[in-house]
Image 1 (cartoon, rainbow, N blue to C red):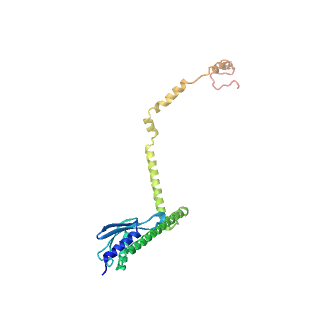
Image 2: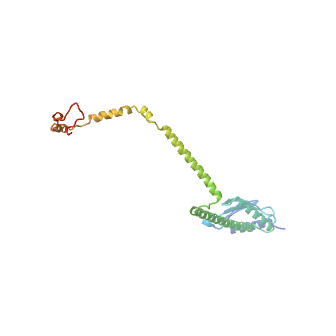
Image 3: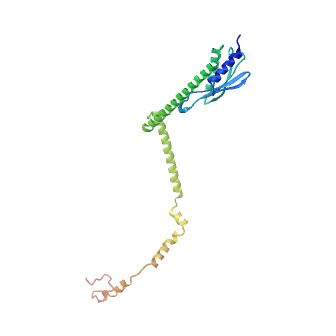
Length: 243
């Protein structure tokens, strides 16, 4: 007859020796404990971790222990689901013998795989970003190949923008024409215009300087008297002394 209690106590002692820093007893009846499992360090020393909780059933190891994810760090929901599925498969395959070490080892390997997957995924994302950057740079220097479709699309957009500019310019010119005043309107609007010329003449007259010496010199000129001319005929305006 199998002594389940004895086998369970022996395994607990072994587990405490194997995992001194991560093994914690939660209760003795029924025996329940946790073991924290951490992956190997990944890129940038990042790790994933989970704490597994086990509870012995009455007839363990002929029956599978109860297990659950007690806590976890850096694991996605699908990772947690995969670990629980893994524990179910391993427990079924190891019925009849103590299996906690085997279950923990399987989870340890799974966590290492997850870290590798994270590293691979990040490398792929990095390469994808590099490819996108290279493609963007090519587009910048080489432009987009011209096709009938994209040319017609560009042409329609260009024509629409050009028409809008013309409409705006015509509207501005029309508005400017409306705002421009005729000469009559300017005269009627600015009442100073009718007195500006008069004022200019008055200002000019007040400022004219006359050189009187020019008129004094005229007194010295000897002008011929037409009366001294023997051929002068006052009745004949066309008479000429030289005739």
